[in-house]
Amino acid sequence: MKNTPKTLALLGEDAARFIAKDKKMFIDGAWCPAAGGSVIEVEDPATGQMFDRVPRGLAADVDLAVAAARAAFDEGPWGQMSPAERGKLVWKLGDLVEAHADELAQLEALDNGKPVTDARIGDVAFSYELLRYMAGWSTKITGQTIPLSAEAPFHAYTLREAVGVCGQIVPWNFSFMMAVWKVAPALAAGCTIVLKPAEQTPLTALRFAELVEEAGFPKGVFNVVTGYGHEAGAALAAHPDVDKIAFTGSTEVGRKILDAAQGNLKKVSLELGGKSPMIVFPDADPDVAIPAIGYGIFYNMGQTCTAGTRLYIHKDIAPVILEGLKTFAENMTVGVGLDPATQIGPLVSKEQFDKVLGYIEAGLADGATLLCGGTQVGEEGYFIAPTILTETKPHMSVVCEEIFGPVLSVATFDDDGFEEIVKEANASVYGLAGSVFTRDISRAHQVARKLKAGTIGINTHHVIDPALPFGGFKQSGWGREQGYEAILLYTEVKSVGVAL
Ligand code: NAP
Ligand code: MG
Image (tube, rainbow, N blue to C red; front, top):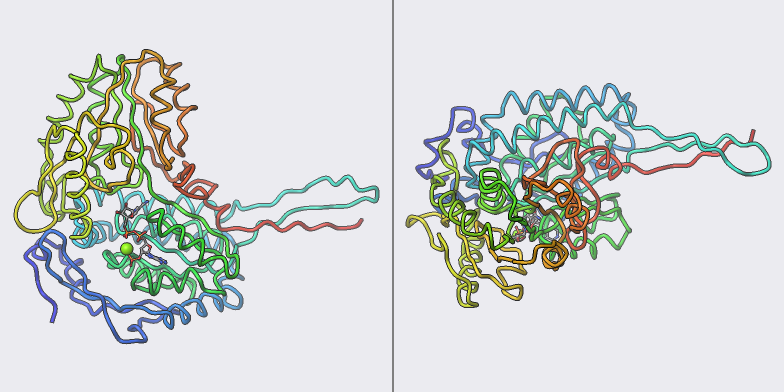
């Protein structure tokens, strides 16, 4: 029997109907239980109650899904489809996601805990726009003609071909959107897919599979195996018949993916952790900087790989910025994700909740000062108040390690140049994002060039768009998602030479 936490009452009809269904995996165009017959319980992080269960896929299920994806790639109608036909299907999938956007946002809010309003205008809207953006690339993936320097005349050209069967492993923080970030370019390029969502948030991937089926993709093109990372995930990463593995998650698991990929040297792209700096110069506009920094850290409860977690403020502007940030943080509406007014929902799990409270404790023990937050909100679920720690020092764990929670560490600087503070901002093993707040256009662009990170904001923090490459320097990853760069991740170049 499924439990029914009280938050389920907040679901719309469509989402409630989906929750009531028995969950199966989507393999080779059919719905099936896990070969081993066991399940994983699905938890509502606002209450800590279990309300659903999904199949616990094992290596045998991954084998079936990979075989289906292989057959669909090598023999199915998918490979014979024209780029335009493929693009139309991907576009149709985008339309279906938009048509079910409220339902998908509610499922994500229930499963992950995130604010439903953010899920609707962020995660889900971005996903259908990305599907349409990538649908457009289907007909624009081309090679080049290349002049050769050989003595005899040649005609030489390149073909850009789909890489093949792709394993895609995604985390729980933006589970639906991370899946679409990977699926959309892979489909546009003509690949086939086995997707493994995170154990904590498997629901939207299964609902998405229903929409893939409804859109009319040939069987085996898209498959979903739910399960644990060390079981289904590890089997997928190591599978000898997978041509490419795409992963988003922790840097630690990213290394395991690399190890597993060694067997057949499959292509690997990785989108890993971050510890992104935000730098505020004395000429910054506080009315611009305060909300940008507030959302920079607290959006999605700080469970965002690009979260601006380290704030460096010039001492001359520190009092006004800190006062503004404290007010911003204390006025955020904390509540269950399914309430449209909520701005801060619960963290995804007890594990994440304990980890984040542990970091706050460690920061205070290391000598940081608590400006606001720092504690659980309410008595049930995994809610933590937006937290700001000031007077942090470079060696503290809250400054060096990825917390993945609503915790901002703040330090001030007094140098009038920017070399020193940029050096401190760059003193991290990560390099995913960074931002700079100033009205000096020259300094803004110079700092943007010096920061060692994949995405830089000037007078803003989170900058994402379907057309804008996204990914990390250093230990934040390999490769870029979004834009044409994402198409490159899912294609191989073949050179053809003709002796004339
Ligand atoms: P994680 O373990 O890296 O999970 C990401 C995905 O990888 C999940 O689908 C996970 O499956 C799977 N996985 C785990 N072990 C695997 C293995 N050996 N082989 C193949 N796949 C495997 O992240 P997490 O444990 O959920 O979170 C831990 C920390 O990672 C967070 O506190 C945060 O610091 C960081 N994180 C970063 C991002 C990001 O976007 N950069 C996202 C999430 C988390 P299961 O979940 O089913 O185990
Ligand atoms: Mg995990």
